[in-house]
Image (cartoon, rainbow, N blue to C red; front, side, top):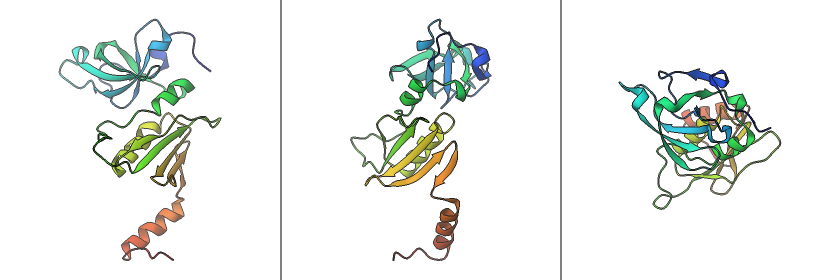
Length: 186
């Protein structure tokens, strides 16, 4: 279900210049709702003059980068109000600080799924930290998140913010075996 009217501060979980908008979906004050939703790459509003600070964003309509003024931000969108089209676009954003794909080996792919099973292509991730950052970035907004290794085997899966794979029991066994000197492959 796509929204027809403009977003307002009532649609935001947090508003004001003091709220940390970095790595959050923000609402920009514009008349056209299609051009209001952005993912904030950086800009926490904590500078001495946050209203004049520049923030770096990605449009959740087009995927294009944008530079806006912090004072244009109405607030942080409530996650449940993010439309499906914006969730699919968000799923394509690599984490802040991700390594250059031309000079680094890809180790993981990140996928985010809508409740009806739709998803966009995977996002390439070079390190374990990038993979975990992808999960944390997507977690508030996505129904299901999956990380796969280079062989396309699932190594981590969450649904509605809860760990599905590996199970808690498997994680405990892995941690115990790691403490006991390692695991033995059989």
